[in-house]
Image (tube, rainbow, N blue to C red; front, side, top):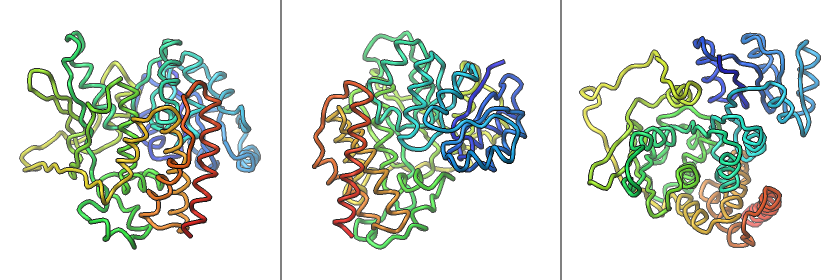
Length: 384
Protein backbone atom coordinates (compact mmCIF):
# COMPACT_ATOMS: atom_id res chain seq x y z
CA UNK A 1 0.00 0.00 0.00
CA UNK A 2 1.47 3.36 -1.07
CA UNK A 3 0.80 6.25 1.31
CA UNK A 4 -0.14 9.35 -0.70
CA UNK A 5 -0.39 13.08 0.02
CA UNK A 6 -2.13 15.33 -2.51
CA UNK A 7 -1.28 19.03 -2.39
CA UNK A 8 -3.77 21.23 -4.24
CA UNK A 9 -6.48 18.58 -4.05
CA UNK A 10 -9.34 20.96 -4.90
CA UNK A 11 -7.89 21.87 -8.31
CA UNK A 12 -8.39 20.04 -11.59
CA UNK A 13 -5.38 17.71 -11.18
CA UNK A 14 -6.20 17.07 -7.53
CA UNK A 15 -9.84 16.22 -8.22
CA UNK A 16 -8.89 13.75 -10.96
CA UNK A 17 -6.23 12.20 -8.74
CA UNK A 18 -8.84 11.65 -6.03
CA UNK A 19 -11.05 9.79 -8.52
CA UNK A 20 -8.12 7.52 -9.29
CA UNK A 21 -7.41 6.99 -5.58
CA UNK A 22 -11.02 6.00 -4.96
CA UNK A 23 -10.74 3.30 -7.64
CA UNK A 24 -7.33 1.99 -6.51
CA UNK A 25 -6.61 -0.70 -3.95
CA UNK A 26 -2.88 0.09 -3.68
CA UNK A 27 -3.09 3.78 -2.68
CA UNK A 28 -3.86 5.11 0.80
CA UNK A 29 -4.66 8.84 0.95
CA UNK A 30 -3.20 10.22 4.20
CA UNK A 31 -3.34 14.03 3.80
CA UNK A 32 -4.56 16.76 1.43
CA UNK A 33 -4.22 20.53 1.10
CA UNK A 34 -5.81 23.56 -0.55
CA UNK A 35 -5.26 27.30 -0.69
CA UNK A 36 -8.75 28.65 0.11
CA UNK A 37 -11.51 26.22 -0.88
CA UNK A 38 -11.98 24.84 2.62
CA UNK A 39 -15.52 23.51 2.16
CA UNK A 40 -14.51 21.38 -0.79
CA UNK A 41 -11.34 20.27 1.01
CA UNK A 42 -13.26 19.11 4.08
CA UNK A 43 -15.77 17.29 1.87
CA UNK A 44 -12.87 15.47 0.21
CA UNK A 45 -11.36 14.61 3.60
CA UNK A 46 -14.65 13.16 4.81
CA UNK A 47 -15.20 11.20 1.61
CA UNK A 48 -11.72 9.64 1.67
CA UNK A 49 -11.30 9.19 5.41
CA UNK A 50 -8.49 11.75 5.75
CA UNK A 51 -7.96 13.23 9.22
CA UNK A 52 -5.27 15.84 8.50
CA UNK A 53 -5.42 18.75 6.04
CA UNK A 54 -3.56 22.02 5.41
CA UNK A 55 -5.12 25.30 4.24
CA UNK A 56 -2.93 28.20 3.16
CA UNK A 57 -5.43 30.96 3.99
CA UNK A 58 -5.66 31.51 7.75
CA UNK A 59 -9.24 32.76 7.70
CA UNK A 60 -10.39 29.79 5.65
CA UNK A 61 -8.52 27.48 8.03
CA UNK A 62 -10.46 28.90 10.98
CA UNK A 63 -13.75 28.28 9.18
CA UNK A 64 -12.67 24.71 8.48
CA UNK A 65 -11.78 24.11 12.13
CA UNK A 66 -15.21 25.30 13.20
CA UNK A 67 -16.92 22.94 10.76
CA UNK A 68 -14.79 19.78 11.13
CA UNK A 69 -13.23 17.80 13.95
CA UNK A 70 -10.11 16.73 12.07
CA UNK A 71 -6.68 18.40 12.22
CA UNK A 72 -6.45 21.61 10.16
CA UNK A 73 -2.95 23.02 9.70
CA UNK A 74 -2.27 26.58 8.54
CA UNK A 75 0.48 29.16 8.52
CA UNK A 76 3.96 29.26 6.97
CA UNK A 77 4.96 25.79 8.22
CA UNK A 78 1.66 24.05 7.43
CA UNK A 79 2.79 22.14 4.34
CA UNK A 80 6.06 21.06 5.94
CA UNK A 81 4.21 19.78 9.01
CA UNK A 82 1.58 18.07 6.85
CA UNK A 83 4.13 16.25 4.70
CA UNK A 84 6.42 15.17 7.52
CA UNK A 85 3.61 14.11 9.87
CA UNK A 86 1.82 12.08 7.20
CA UNK A 87 4.93 9.95 6.49
CA UNK A 88 3.97 9.43 2.82
CA UNK A 89 5.66 7.29 0.21
CA UNK A 90 4.59 9.73 -2.51
CA UNK A 91 3.50 13.36 -2.69
CA UNK A 92 1.49 14.71 -5.62
CA UNK A 93 2.26 18.42 -5.93
CA UNK A 94 -0.68 19.92 -7.84
CA UNK A 95 -0.32 23.44 -6.43
CA UNK A 96 -0.64 26.13 -9.11
CA UNK A 97 2.17 28.63 -9.67
CA UNK A 98 5.46 29.36 -7.92
CA UNK A 99 3.79 28.74 -4.54
CA UNK A 100 4.37 25.06 -5.27
CA UNK A 101 8.16 25.35 -5.09
CA UNK A 102 8.24 25.23 -1.28
CA UNK A 103 6.28 21.98 -1.25
CA UNK A 104 8.65 20.48 -3.81
CA UNK A 105 11.68 21.43 -1.71
CA UNK A 106 10.13 20.04 1.48
CA UNK A 107 9.19 16.75 -0.18
CA UNK A 108 12.54 16.16 -1.84
CA UNK A 109 14.45 17.22 1.29
CA UNK A 110 12.69 14.41 3.15
CA UNK A 111 13.71 11.94 0.43
CA UNK A 112 10.07 11.37 -0.54
CA UNK A 113 9.16 10.56 -4.14
CA UNK A 114 7.39 13.43 -5.89
CA UNK A 115 4.71 13.30 -8.58
CA UNK A 116 5.15 16.78 -9.99
CA UNK A 117 2.27 18.62 -11.64
CA UNK A 118 3.68 22.00 -10.57
CA UNK A 119 5.93 22.91 -13.51
CA UNK A 120 6.96 26.17 -11.84
CA UNK A 121 9.03 24.17 -9.35
CA UNK A 122 11.47 23.32 -12.13
CA UNK A 123 11.11 26.62 -13.98
CA UNK A 124 11.92 28.64 -10.86
CA UNK A 125 13.99 26.12 -8.91
CA UNK A 126 15.85 24.66 -11.87
CA UNK A 127 19.14 22.98 -11.11
CA UNK A 128 18.65 23.36 -7.35
CA UNK A 129 15.58 21.11 -7.41
CA UNK A 130 17.28 18.51 -9.60
CA UNK A 131 20.35 18.54 -7.36
CA UNK A 132 18.17 18.15 -4.26
CA UNK A 133 16.42 15.10 -5.73
CA UNK A 134 19.75 13.55 -6.65
CA UNK A 135 21.19 14.20 -3.19
CA UNK A 136 18.31 12.58 -1.32
CA UNK A 137 17.53 9.83 -3.81
CA UNK A 138 13.93 10.98 -4.21
CA UNK A 139 12.37 10.23 -7.58
CA UNK A 140 10.77 12.97 -9.70
CA UNK A 141 7.78 11.69 -11.66
CA UNK A 142 6.37 14.27 -14.11
CA UNK A 143 2.60 14.64 -14.33
CA UNK A 144 2.35 17.10 -17.24
CA UNK A 145 1.06 15.06 -20.17
CA UNK A 146 3.98 16.02 -22.42
CA UNK A 147 6.67 15.32 -19.81
CA UNK A 148 5.06 12.08 -18.72
CA UNK A 149 5.11 11.03 -22.38
CA UNK A 150 8.77 12.00 -22.74
CA UNK A 151 9.63 10.20 -19.49
CA UNK A 152 8.13 6.99 -20.88
CA UNK A 153 9.69 7.37 -24.33
CA UNK A 154 13.15 8.07 -22.93
CA UNK A 155 12.85 5.09 -20.56
CA UNK A 156 12.21 2.87 -23.58
CA UNK A 157 15.73 3.68 -24.80
CA UNK A 158 17.51 2.85 -21.54
CA UNK A 159 20.69 0.92 -22.22
CA UNK A 160 21.35 2.63 -25.53
CA UNK A 161 24.67 4.52 -25.93
CA UNK A 162 24.85 8.28 -25.27
CA UNK A 163 23.65 10.36 -28.19
CA UNK A 164 20.98 7.87 -29.26
CA UNK A 165 18.22 10.37 -28.47
CA UNK A 166 18.89 13.47 -30.54
CA UNK A 167 15.77 15.59 -30.10
CA UNK A 168 12.70 15.95 -27.88
CA UNK A 169 9.48 17.35 -29.36
CA UNK A 170 6.63 18.72 -27.26
CA UNK A 171 3.27 19.32 -28.89
CA UNK A 172 0.96 22.28 -28.27
CA UNK A 173 -2.74 22.38 -29.04
CA UNK A 174 -2.35 26.02 -30.07
CA UNK A 175 -4.96 27.12 -27.54
CA UNK A 176 -8.18 28.99 -28.34
CA UNK A 177 -6.47 31.48 -30.66
CA UNK A 178 -4.60 29.11 -32.97
CA UNK A 179 -4.44 30.56 -36.46
CA UNK A 180 -5.10 34.15 -35.44
CA UNK A 181 -2.65 36.89 -36.35
CA UNK A 182 -1.25 39.31 -33.81
CA UNK A 183 -3.66 42.08 -34.84
CA UNK A 184 -6.56 39.68 -34.27
CA UNK A 185 -5.61 39.33 -30.60
CA UNK A 186 -5.73 42.98 -29.58
CA UNK A 187 -9.29 42.90 -28.25
CA UNK A 188 -9.76 39.28 -27.09
CA UNK A 189 -11.70 38.86 -23.87
CA UNK A 190 -10.98 36.89 -20.73
CA UNK A 191 -13.86 34.56 -21.58
CA UNK A 192 -12.43 33.85 -25.02
CA UNK A 193 -8.97 33.17 -23.58
CA UNK A 194 -10.40 30.74 -21.02
CA UNK A 195 -12.27 28.74 -23.67
CA UNK A 196 -9.65 26.08 -24.38
CA UNK A 197 -10.57 23.76 -27.28
CA UNK A 198 -9.08 20.57 -25.82
CA UNK A 199 -8.33 20.63 -22.09
CA UNK A 200 -10.42 21.66 -19.07
CA UNK A 201 -8.03 23.57 -16.80
CA UNK A 202 -7.91 26.29 -14.17
CA UNK A 203 -7.84 29.99 -15.02
CA UNK A 204 -4.11 30.65 -14.82
CA UNK A 205 -3.12 27.57 -16.79
CA UNK A 206 -5.79 28.28 -19.41
CA UNK A 207 -4.41 31.77 -20.00
CA UNK A 208 -0.87 30.38 -20.19
CA UNK A 209 -2.10 27.98 -22.86
CA UNK A 210 -3.72 30.84 -24.78
CA UNK A 211 -0.46 32.85 -24.79
CA UNK A 212 1.68 29.70 -25.32
CA UNK A 213 3.62 30.61 -22.16
CA UNK A 214 2.55 27.22 -20.86
CA UNK A 215 4.59 25.60 -23.60
CA UNK A 216 7.53 27.90 -22.87
CA UNK A 217 7.49 26.85 -19.22
CA UNK A 218 7.31 23.23 -20.35
CA UNK A 219 10.43 23.69 -22.51
CA UNK A 220 12.33 24.90 -19.45
CA UNK A 221 10.89 22.03 -17.42
CA UNK A 222 11.98 19.48 -20.05
CA UNK A 223 15.48 20.98 -20.12
CA UNK A 224 15.78 20.51 -16.37
CA UNK A 225 14.08 17.12 -16.10
CA UNK A 226 15.93 15.39 -18.91
CA UNK A 227 19.19 17.38 -19.10
CA UNK A 228 18.64 18.18 -22.78
CA UNK A 229 20.09 21.30 -24.41
CA UNK A 230 17.61 23.89 -25.67
CA UNK A 231 18.90 23.38 -29.21
CA UNK A 232 17.60 19.82 -28.97
CA UNK A 233 14.09 20.79 -27.83
CA UNK A 234 11.25 21.92 -30.07
CA UNK A 235 7.55 22.76 -29.94
CA UNK A 236 5.11 21.83 -32.71
CA UNK A 237 1.46 22.88 -32.83
CA UNK A 238 -0.83 19.84 -32.97
CA UNK A 239 -4.49 20.86 -32.56
CA UNK A 240 -5.90 17.37 -31.96
CA UNK A 241 -3.67 16.82 -28.88
CA UNK A 242 -3.32 13.14 -29.75
CA UNK A 243 0.48 13.04 -30.02
CA UNK A 244 1.72 14.25 -26.64
CA UNK A 245 5.46 14.11 -27.32
CA UNK A 246 8.05 12.55 -29.60
CA UNK A 247 11.72 11.64 -29.46
CA UNK A 248 13.99 11.58 -32.51
CA UNK A 249 16.73 8.94 -32.58
CA UNK A 250 20.17 8.76 -34.12
CA UNK A 251 19.15 6.12 -36.68
CA UNK A 252 16.58 8.46 -38.22
CA UNK A 253 13.57 6.90 -36.52
CA UNK A 254 11.19 8.61 -34.09
CA UNK A 255 9.04 7.35 -31.23
CA UNK A 256 5.80 9.09 -30.27
CA UNK A 257 3.37 8.80 -27.36
CA UNK A 258 -0.27 8.91 -28.51
CA UNK A 259 -3.63 8.90 -26.77
CA UNK A 260 -6.83 10.86 -26.39
CA UNK A 261 -6.32 13.98 -24.22
CA UNK A 262 -7.16 12.91 -20.68
CA UNK A 263 -5.05 13.96 -17.70
CA UNK A 264 -5.97 10.82 -15.79
CA UNK A 265 -3.46 8.91 -17.92
CA UNK A 266 -0.30 10.78 -16.80
CA UNK A 267 -1.65 11.18 -13.26
CA UNK A 268 -2.24 7.44 -12.95
CA UNK A 269 1.16 6.67 -14.44
CA UNK A 270 2.87 8.82 -11.78
CA UNK A 271 0.76 7.52 -8.88
CA UNK A 272 1.24 3.85 -9.74
CA UNK A 273 4.77 3.93 -11.20
CA UNK A 274 6.49 1.62 -12.11
CA UNK A 275 3.27 -0.31 -12.75
CA UNK A 276 0.57 0.68 -15.20
CA UNK A 277 -3.02 0.53 -14.06
CA UNK A 278 -6.14 -0.17 -16.10
CA UNK A 279 -8.26 2.90 -16.80
CA UNK A 280 -11.77 2.86 -18.23
CA UNK A 281 -10.83 5.08 -21.17
CA UNK A 282 -11.47 4.62 -24.87
CA UNK A 283 -8.55 3.15 -26.85
CA UNK A 284 -7.19 5.21 -29.72
CA UNK A 285 -9.23 4.75 -32.91
CA UNK A 286 -7.03 5.78 -35.84
CA UNK A 287 -9.74 5.18 -38.43
CA UNK A 288 -12.09 7.52 -36.61
CA UNK A 289 -9.38 10.17 -36.26
CA UNK A 290 -8.65 10.04 -39.96
CA UNK A 291 -5.73 12.47 -39.91
CA UNK A 292 -3.44 14.36 -37.56
CA UNK A 293 -2.25 17.90 -38.26
CA UNK A 294 0.97 19.68 -37.31
CA UNK A 295 2.12 23.25 -37.88
CA UNK A 296 4.78 25.71 -36.80
CA UNK A 297 4.33 28.15 -33.92
CA UNK A 298 3.52 31.75 -34.92
CA UNK A 299 6.09 33.53 -32.73
CA UNK A 300 4.91 36.98 -33.79
CA UNK A 301 1.35 36.38 -32.57
CA UNK A 302 2.50 34.40 -29.52
CA UNK A 303 5.81 35.92 -28.30
CA UNK A 304 5.65 34.32 -24.85
CA UNK A 305 7.18 31.11 -26.13
CA UNK A 306 10.22 32.98 -27.47
CA UNK A 307 10.52 34.95 -24.21
CA UNK A 308 10.54 31.70 -22.23
CA UNK A 309 13.12 30.10 -24.51
CA UNK A 310 15.39 33.16 -24.21
CA UNK A 311 15.07 33.15 -20.41
CA UNK A 312 15.83 29.44 -20.30
CA UNK A 313 18.95 29.90 -22.42
CA UNK A 314 20.12 32.77 -20.21
CA UNK A 315 19.67 30.63 -17.11
CA UNK A 316 20.35 31.75 -13.56
CA UNK A 317 17.42 33.71 -12.15
CA UNK A 318 16.02 34.57 -15.61
CA UNK A 319 13.39 31.77 -15.63
CA UNK A 320 12.38 32.81 -12.10
CA UNK A 321 11.89 36.41 -13.27
CA UNK A 322 9.98 35.20 -16.33
CA UNK A 323 7.61 33.12 -14.21
CA UNK A 324 7.00 35.84 -11.62
CA UNK A 325 6.25 38.48 -14.27
CA UNK A 326 3.94 36.07 -16.06
CA UNK A 327 1.98 35.30 -12.89
CA UNK A 328 1.52 39.02 -12.18
CA UNK A 329 0.51 39.81 -15.77
CA UNK A 330 -1.89 36.86 -16.07
CA UNK A 331 -3.57 37.82 -12.78
CA UNK A 332 -3.98 41.35 -14.11
CA UNK A 333 -5.52 40.07 -17.35
CA UNK A 334 -7.96 37.86 -15.44
CA UNK A 335 -8.89 40.91 -13.36
CA UNK A 336 -9.31 42.88 -16.61
CA UNK A 337 -6.51 45.29 -15.67
CA UNK A 338 -4.47 44.65 -18.82
CA UNK A 339 -5.03 43.50 -22.39
CA UNK A 340 -4.13 40.05 -23.68
CA UNK A 341 -1.15 41.24 -25.74
CA UNK A 342 0.13 43.27 -22.78
CA UNK A 343 0.92 40.05 -20.90
CA UNK A 344 3.97 39.49 -23.09
CA UNK A 345 4.87 43.20 -22.95
CA UNK A 346 4.97 43.14 -19.15
CA UNK A 347 7.10 39.99 -19.12
CA UNK A 348 9.57 41.36 -21.65
CA UNK A 349 9.91 44.69 -19.84
CA UNK A 350 10.43 42.94 -16.50
CA UNK A 351 13.14 40.70 -17.97
CA UNK A 352 14.85 43.73 -19.53
CA UNK A 353 14.97 45.50 -16.16
CA UNK A 354 16.03 42.52 -14.07
CA UNK A 355 19.53 41.88 -12.81
CA UNK A 356 20.05 38.22 -13.70
CA UNK A 357 22.26 36.30 -11.28
CA UNK A 358 23.36 32.73 -10.74
CA UNK A 359 20.94 30.68 -8.64
CA UNK A 360 23.21 29.87 -5.74
CA UNK A 361 20.41 29.20 -3.26
CA UNK A 362 16.64 29.17 -2.88
CA UNK A 363 16.98 32.48 -1.03
CA UNK A 364 18.42 34.00 -4.23
CA UNK A 365 15.35 32.81 -6.09
CA UNK A 366 13.00 34.23 -3.45
CA UNK A 367 14.66 37.64 -3.76
CA UNK A 368 14.54 37.51 -7.57
CA UNK A 369 10.88 36.52 -7.50
CA UNK A 370 9.98 39.37 -5.16
CA UNK A 371 11.85 41.96 -7.22
CA UNK A 372 10.32 40.71 -10.48
CA UNK A 373 6.79 40.92 -9.10
CA UNK A 374 7.34 44.50 -7.99
CA UNK A 375 8.82 45.41 -11.38
CA UNK A 376 5.95 43.74 -13.27
CA UNK A 377 3.40 45.61 -11.15
CA UNK A 378 5.10 48.90 -12.01
CA UNK A 379 5.00 48.09 -15.73
CA UNK A 380 1.29 47.31 -15.45
CA UNK A 381 0.73 50.79 -14.04
CA UNK A 382 2.69 52.29 -16.93
CA UNK A 383 0.61 50.39 -19.50
CA UNK A 384 -2.72 51.29 -17.90
